[in-house]
Each structure stands twice: as C-alpha cells, then as structure tokens.
Length: 261
Image (cartoon, rainbow, N blue to C red):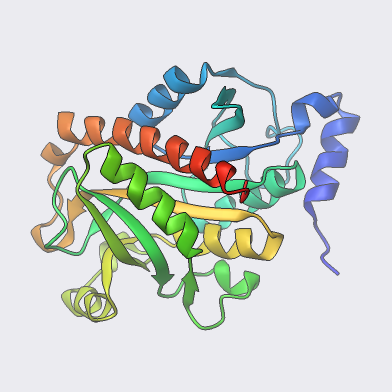
C-alpha cells in the first residue's frame, strides 16, 4: 500500500474546485521540453491552454504548460513537465489516473556518435542503464523494452516525413557532467544510439506498470564525444522538432487505427 497516491492528489484538486472536465484527459499525452514541438503540436491540434493539476494541488511535480486539442479524432494533451526522471514519474502516474491511454516523450537526447547525425530521429526500441526512479516501477534488470508495434509506428511515421531514422537502444545517466568515454563505449556495445537522464526508462516503466501505451522519439542535440556546441540548437534542430511533432501524431493515429489507443 502506497502512502502517497495520485488519487490523493486528484481529491485535493477536486476540493479546491477543479472540475471533472478539467481533470479528465482521454486520448494521449505528449511530453516535451521543445518549443518547436509545442508550437507545431498546437498548429496541428488546434490546441488551447488548459487547466489541470497545478502546484496548489500537488505535493511534488506539476507541468509548466498544459494544452489540449484534437488530431484525427484523437484527444491530445501536450505538457512541458519538470525535467528529470523523478518528477516525470509523478506526471505519468497522474495522467494515467486521469484517463490517458498513451504517453509519448518527444524531445532531444545526447548522441553516442555515428551513425547518428544532427537532424536525424531516434526511436528507442529499449532503454538501459541505471536511474533512481524506474527501479520502483519494476525495472530491476536495468532494461525496459518498448512495444514493437509502437516502435514500428513511430519509425514509419518518421520515414514518411522524410527523416533519417535510427532504431536501437537508449542509455541513461543522471549526471551530465560525469559521462565518461568508457561509459559511452559500454552503452554502444549494448546497441545504444543515444543517452539521456533516465526519463525514457521511467516513462516506459511507469506506462507498463499503469497499463498504458508508452513511446519515445528523440533527436540529437549533443554528440558526446565532441562536447557541447550550442550551434546544434539552430534551424535544423527546430525543423527536426517540427518533424517530431508531425511523426508522433501520425504514429498515434496509426496506433488508434490498430486499436492500441
């Protein structure tokens, strides 16, 4: 029995006056930290700012932005969560408790090198490595796999958008300034193409635990062996973000046609 639950948070929200219409989120949720993705999803879904869980309702983690709209008859909620695996776990749990049937993370990650290049897209088929959160959702082995149908839908939608797509592993490291060449090489030997700070592990593990669909779509914004270069955050990065938005929505439409959503 858990001492703190999403249901307690929802009860607090109701008592403060938040309506069932505001709390109920059918369809899918897309989590992102990218302005270009947020803006493009808004264009495609006709989205408007929405009331949902805020800091006055929640004991720990709430999104910075919530917007709601529709795409191809599918309800779409877009959220900008706090960065990091632990707060993201709370938000995915809250979304599941509010009726969301699928949660997708679309953002940027750290490339482990060739063949991944700036402007490419990466569809993780699995995510490996330690993090401090997903272990609490059954990820004891340090690996969580993505439903192959979700991987196929995301990769095919990226190809239809004209993107160069890589399907493989994602790695996790929660300490950006402590990534070593040996760590990168170890993950490359495991088939990993990119790395981030444990959010993929967590989203996929929480989604599996809560019985909803989970998927991830990345683009690179750092090549770790080359170090940090802000020039990567230019027009190619923004254009690839718009492509990610297109691809996630079309993949979700396909998953809806296949009755997974």
